[in-house]
Structures are given as C-alpha cells and as structure tokens.
Amino acid sequence: MRFLVLGVVLASPMMMACATYQARPIHAPELETAYRARTLDNAQLRSFVEVGVGTALSAWPPRALDLKTLTFIGYYYSADLDVARAQLAVADAGIRAAGARVNPDLAVNAGYNRNPESQLEYGLVPSFTFETAGKRGYRILRAERQADAARIGLSEAGWTLRSHIRAAFVNHVLATQRLGVLRTEQSVRGEIVQIFDRRLAVGEAARPELDVYRVDLITTDAAVRAAAGDVAQTRATLANAVGVPLTALQDVPVESSSLEDPPVEDGLPIRTLQRAGVLHRADLQRSLADYAAADAALRLELARQYPDVVLSPGYTFEEGFARYVLGAALQPVALFHRNQGPIAVAEAQRLEAAARFEALQAQAIGDMERALVQYHAALEEWSDANDRLIGVQRDREDAARRALAAGEGDRLSLATVRLQTVTAARARLDALTRVQTALGALEDAMQQPLEAALSVPDPTRVSPRKGDVSR
Image 1: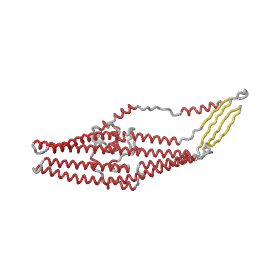
Image 2 (image 1 turned 135 degrees about the horizontal axis):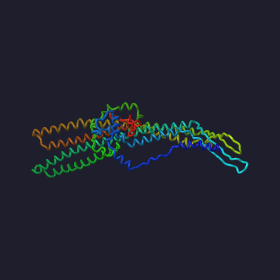
Image 3 (image 1 turned 45 degrees about the vertical axis):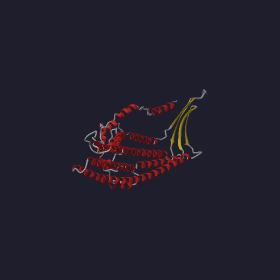
Image 4 (image 1 turned 30 degrees about the vertical axis):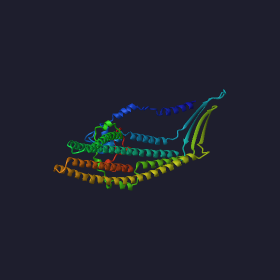
C-alpha cells in the first residue's frame, strides 16, 4: 500500500504544476470604441514615427502627411500586422511543442483475493517511450521551417500594408488634383457663359451658341461634384489603410509634391535587383520555407516506419511476495504497412510545394518585366505631357494675355486658350496617374520601395503599441 501512496504523492506535484486556463474575452463594443477613439495626437505613435524617420519632428500631429509618415502610422495601428505577429507566435510555440519528449505513463493497480490466506495485491508499472530514427529532430525541423514561413509571412504582410497605403495615398492625391483641375475648368466655362450672356444681350451672339456653352458648364458642374465625392471617398480609404478612423485624418492635408517628380528609370535600383534575382521577394522566400517544411514532414513520415521502444519496469506485490519485472515493447509495429500512405501524402505535398515555388517564381519574373516596360512607357508619356504639352500651352496663354493687354485680343479668346490649358492639364494629370500606377506596379513586382527616402522598417523587428520602437 505504501507504494501506491508513493505513486500518488509523486503524481501530485506534476498535476499541481499544470497550466491553468485564463479567460480573455473579446468585447466587440469596447474594441469599436477604442478604434473610433484613435487619433494622431498620441505620444507613443509620435515616438514610433520619429524613430522610423530618423529625426525628431518639430510638430505633432504633422502639418501635412507624406507617404512615409502615413506608412509608419499604418505600421503602428495595423490589425493585419497584429494577425501576422500572432501567427508567428503560434509557429514559435509550435517549435516548443515539437521538441517535447514523450511523457512516461504510470499504471497503478490494486486488488485483493477473497481467499482468507491471501494478502492485498498492488503494483506500480511505469512505461518510458524512446523515440527512434530521429523523429523528434524531424518534428523540430518541420516546426522551425514553418516558423520561418510565418516570419517571412509577417514581412510579406508589412509589404502588402505599405502597398495598400501607397495606392490609397496616390489615389487621394490624384483625386484632389483632379478636383482642382475641374474647378479651374468650371471657372473658365462660367466666364465663357458670362461673356456670351453679355453678347446675347447686345445682339452679338445667338441663343443656340450660348446653350452649347451652358450645357458644357452644367456637365462640368456635375463632374466637380463627382470629383469632390471621390476626394472624400479616397480620404476615407486612406484612413482605413493606415488603421485610423476618418476623423483622425479629416483636417490634416496630404503632402503631394513627391508625386510630381517621379524617379527616372536610370535612378532606380532596378538593375541591381534584377542581377540579384527575385528571391528578395517575401512571397518567394516564404514559398521556399514552405518547401523546406514539406521536406521535413516527408523525412518525419519516413522515420515513422520504425517503431519506438517502450520500456516498462514494474513492481508488484502478490501473495506476500514482491516481484520486479522489466517489460519492453515496440510501438507501433509496422505489420500491415510501413507507413506507406502518410509517406506518399508527404511526398506529394513536397512536390506540390516545389511546383508552387516554380509557378510563383515564373509569375514574379513576368510581373517584373511587364511592370518595367509599363513604367518606361508611362514615364515617356509623362515627360512629353509635362515638358512639351504644358509648356506650349502656357506660352499660348501668355501670348493671349499679352494680346488682350495690348488691345489686340478679347476676353473670349483668352478664355478659350485657358480652356485649352485646362484640357492640357487634364492630359498631364492622366499621364501622372499612369506613371504613378506603373511605379506602384513595379514596386509590387519587386516588393521593395524603389526610392530610398520611402524605405520602411522590417515588421519582424518592431512591436508598436508595446513600447518597442526599435528598427
């Protein structure tokens, strides 16, 4: 009996050391309130942005938001990065779980015989499992490769966030500029209508001619209202991309000068990146890590062909005599199959991982080449629109103004030339839209900012909202 009590005493500390459940309920209304309360006037956010940009900020919140500042704000508040960090924590915990050794078993038995001459019977039979063929090492290796994939996935999530913020930023800036061009056109068309109103009043113009310009003005008014709605919508999209409510960005202007000077092709590190290949892309690195995890899983299944050794030293007390026994077993014995089914599945999954990598690599190369051609064409179009078209039209407008001042022209001629200038400005804005869209596609194809001033931190090395602002 004392051995039975000893077994219970030995098991009690192990049960007392068990982890306990800790509730962490989710209160959706409180989370919504916290989200809506987010602002830029946050000391910890300011510290995070200052470390990111590498200099102390003279004012916070900033007087104007540029792309880099918006990107750091997004890194600070992003829920998508929080999800990726949580997935990495799960993968890191998986390494610990994979490295756990098989716990021993302890069987305790007790009984009695109804024979009066018999005594109480009891016994302790522990069993210890010894894994063979390196199974534990392969489990750890697979878990480590899965953690590598999760870590790279966090970097990929960081790039995806930066790409979304850039797209929202560019769309908002271009929508604002488009609204400005349309308002200028609205003003010019309104002036033309006033000129024809006066000419109609003195009999120098016909009603149908005036109606044509009024229809154009009404159409422009509608376009202005639609453009104003686009500005509001793109600002809301930008706020959502950086993880703050619209009210946080409502009164802060967006700095747009950087878009007016797209980088020339020779100034981009494209050739260097092409020589290095496409393996700097996070999705390709993650695909390689997935393949390594699949390879480790195959090696684990191959190792499982071999049974583990189970030793069971036991003590029993029967009929007044103590017995000591040592049992040994092989578990499981591959009698009907040698784990061939799981091995075939693991091998097929490794082949699938290899095929996925090859397909993704081919897609990445194609995306890069296509984006480079697109950016080259868009950059040439932008240069023509910005240098030639706008320059010629400004010269024409200056000449019309001089002619009006010298008494050799009239207001209608000047307004007509100004309207043509607006048309040229719209063409220039369309070219700017295409060149910025092409630049964004090129950055996405390379998964790297192509301007050094717009570099962002590695999300695997920063932990915003937790006091860590290291880069």
